[in-house]
Length: 285
Image 1 (cartoon, rainbow, N blue to C red):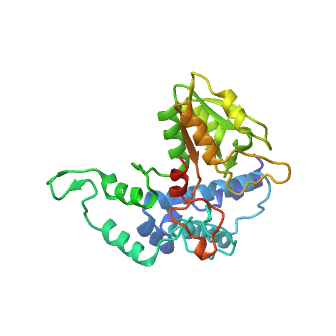
Image 2 (cartoon, helix red, strand yellow):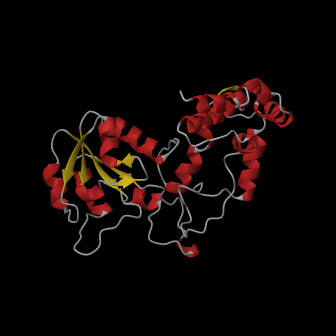
Image 3 (cartoon, rainbow, N blue to C red):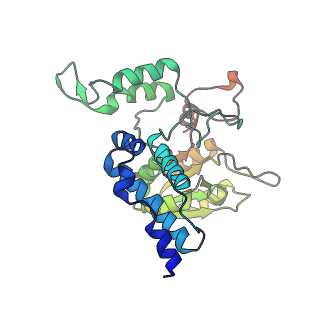
């Protein structure tokens, strides 16, 4: 190592000296000494690497302290912060999705800050089930016979495929083999579930007879997927929900539909049109 480089490295303050600084002690109180030390170590490692690359000719303590303080400031701030949604997309997956009404947010804060009957039946005085609080409401909103809530749509699709078609085949149009976001890909989800994906039709044209020809003794479900903001225009054809469910039911099969976020209620009166509600889909089979 060049003598000048060694000299520069030796002039970098030690960890003990840095932790003894009054403003650093404040961060130790806020973040904890262990976390504060870890953050400073990261800054020092990057700084030493810059010295070794020849990018630092002399230690500038003011600059080094500023970098350390900014790193500690960033770690001490809340990562989540309110933003203005100016995208034109109301339910934006990157901006927190649907906003909670003030009354709902107030109720959530009240319940989450206290003990509650999350899994306790107050009438029977025994352990209850957390889904009891929401299943009836969802069934009333959608007309479903039963309901189950999971963390996100990908989890719901994976669970349904595993339960309904994990030991057989699931038929899907090639025009619906989509990718949403960075990692939700229909072919991958189907593979993870254990079901065998049977593609029918083409990217732009899928007919009812394509599904009919693919049905065999190994078929468990017919899968229909909402394309989200992906659209095929021009020479294009797809099978409607009612036609598809009529065919599947005539063969003793279930139809599973991935609606994405979907609408629980009809919002067309508020200018949001073109999206089916979950209740409408259930009515059509």
